[in-house]
Amino acid sequence: MSTTNNFPKLHNATWPGIVGKGPDSEPVIPFDDLLAYTAAAEVNGIKFDGVDIGLLDPHVDINGGRDEANRLADKVAAHNLKIGSLVAPIWAGSAMGSKESRTVFVDMVRKACQFAQRLNELGIRPYGVIRIDSSCTPSDWAADPAGNTKIIAETFREACDVAADYGERLAAEGEICWGGMHSWKTMIDTLEAVDRPNIGFQADMSHTFLYLLGYNRPEDRILPENFQWDDREALTEGLRELTRALRPWTIDFHVAQNDGTVFGSGSHDKTGRHCLPNDPNGKLDIAKDAGHWLRDEQGRLTKAFNHICWDGCMFSNAVLNQQQTWNDILAALISVREAHGWQA
Image 1 (tube, rainbow, N blue to C red):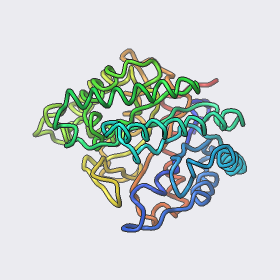
Image 2: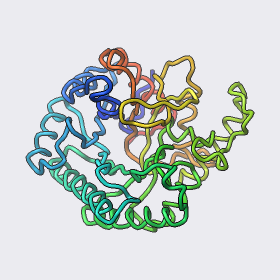
Image 3: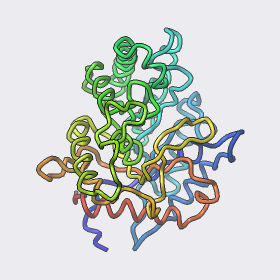
Image 4: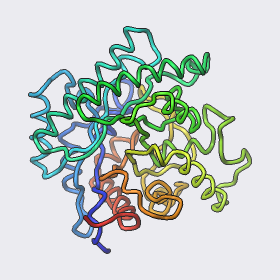
């Protein structure tokens, strides 16, 4: 296997140890365990470069200030890893909620930016963004699409202004379970309404893939209702249309696999079903299809971000507690970098 390319850097995510876990599901996987699995993964001498982190209890105390950021940096550095993008825990509020709820939303962004600032000062975080969503449902949004998009945009705009004070960019997650972000068209409408230079889009090969099928917004589907999965030409053309629209906004990227269905567990509602990279039901050619996001219409590398991250939520603990799982995930990331990476 060629190892010429050293960019984009390869990151694992820590939030799969939390999302879909909890009292009504399986136990949360400890942060230290996820770091250990990440650091131990190796494929032909190549290892993960870092982790993207959800600033979520019980892994991280968002109210812990500098001491908590220092603790986090020390843990990650001890495994010879870097930190990239951070997930702001905005769900105690809502971008479409009451004035008080929206204030909480923006305050969580502020705290995430403060964490980021300290990690940057410590030299552990050389790249990355702050990830957000609208923290509201598509059905609630649908009660007043124009009015609710305006409210979400106002909240995002305020959050962007806060982030700008820390030199941070915000990435709105392309996932079908968030109101105003649940289709590719509503996502673009929301981003355009925000009208700030430091907001962009976080593409996920699994979540964003569902935009093609129009879940939660059938009128915006790209693939026909009678689409057959063995029609690779139509799927490729659908991905081209989708990425043509969203690529200019994309500032953060998740490598993932999807089987074309939705799934939810724990407190996380229906969303794109993540599959392991070698799942026989996976609909994506990971290395090839990542290129729709990482290259422009002429096939040139965009180099729009310095790292890519694997996202695989809602797998069972039995799967996540196997080292081979992480080796296979690393291999998928390597295949993307070999196909669409660069040397720097």
